[in-house]
Length: 367
Length: 270
Image (cartoon, rainbow over all chains, first blue to last red; front, top):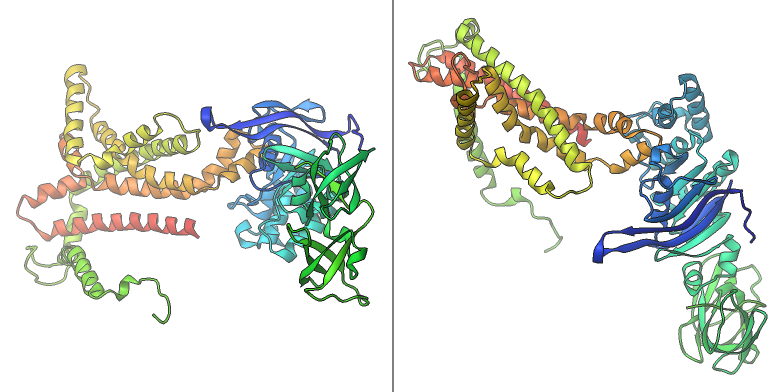
């Protein structure tokens, strides 16, 4: 996707963050560069310890980068203390002030900015309405539920109308149902306020459903930036494919390639054409990745590209997972079928089956 | 065993009787002292009947008044100054990047808790004698206030530090994130949340100063008799239950402060 210069809310340029000194040095961020556009719902996704929270803290100003620049609308904010950055944060623990009421919490930022009292009151009322908390405005924050605290934390961070809102795993403390509700709520708030959201999470499903774009991080580096569909359908590296959604890995040998498509031969001597990411030159033994829903089961093994024995059938309600022990050995291959009223064929464990691939289903990725 | 159980000390044999013996040993003398303050006879060992006269005479006793006044001046001043010092020290030792000598500073602040009080007393006495001898300076009751302030600091420091360490640092980050300068964040967030710790530290400092005997006895000059010194002087003469009445008054003041300190600590725990 082409970059649109001048429309970036945040630009991170060559940022390194090293903790500790001497031999105990750890690079939490290893020369990271990324651009986050205005009005975008941008997610930093990765396992714990990948540096996503460190990057968020650098943007908020709680830590300063060892090297590199962080631009907010073109201005370098890296040396500014947090209270001079037009950026607000929703903390994982919410960090509501326990000695203040809901309304006082929401008004705190505006008060610190020295806004007139009438303006603060009007804005607080507006925020309370936005997060549907009008009835509880006089309560202490210890007297409201976790979901309500979450809403207050959001309202408090949005009240000063920041240029960018940072969200540090804000939904992780909520139970499943409430989390689903808040995901929709967050999307709505982002649409209504038009503020750029930078959302940190380790939950790939949350990232896929909410984000305009996602940056997948691992070990202090950004591996891939793209729309949820890009990341899911065209992962750039094996780590990305493995971390997001379920993936099958198949060993094979590259026999030829042209224009970004390689022909890969399996041990069974069947071949398949598989795309690969730009700038990658696959040769020899490679690993193919195939999403479970991009493959199909056929009851006649002769019709399959690869073959195996059904070892397990797992029913999930909306879909069914078929685990196939491949004839060539290796890990089980998983095929996902959407369940419908008229599932034509039924399979039994122990049956010999074939696996067919959809067009463009397989990709060759860097290990 | 049928069901796993956590060991309950109350199930141990002899638990109840040991508890009762401990309580008796601790509190019987105090109770006897309080009961005899109501004795209508003039001996502290022979019960004759109930009266409040000894409280009356204590309240009219000028020496008691002076001692009470000295005690209050010293305790209140020492409490205020030591609590301020302790608060600043606690902030300086919890809200900074770890620095070399942090452990040493912690030791220095808490030294009065570990050094035997009589040593501190002799050292303080020699110190003031030295100042008076070489510089010709004598701060009068200020000597006592200074001495009390120093040994009150660790008592005030402990609850304040504990409160600061319990406090969620994210709250201070949140304040900074919401445009509060470091001073505003301290004034609006850290300090209000620290108040229970400060109150409880001040109450402890006050009690410690209020009933200090050893250091006061050595450092006090003429006319600087405090309540504990006054009681000490009285019991070297033929004792009357008036001394019991005075002791009881002291005890009630101490209980009041301990209770306040406890209630504040409990409220913050909620």
